Image (cartoon, rainbow, N blue to C red; front, side):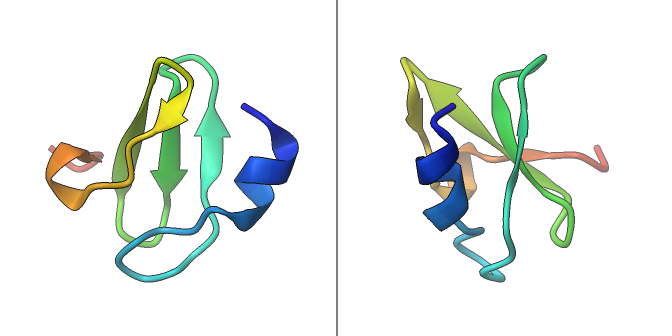
Length: 55
């Protein structure tokens, strides 16, 4: 994940910064407990595509 891109991306719900999880290739929002997938190098920032970390 490009560091410059990670610096500008935020959670679409709460606008918190995201953390890159290289093991699962996801962007994590700790505030909302959601994981947004990265498909073919492109972050998918749709809430319906996010995985709930509490489930």
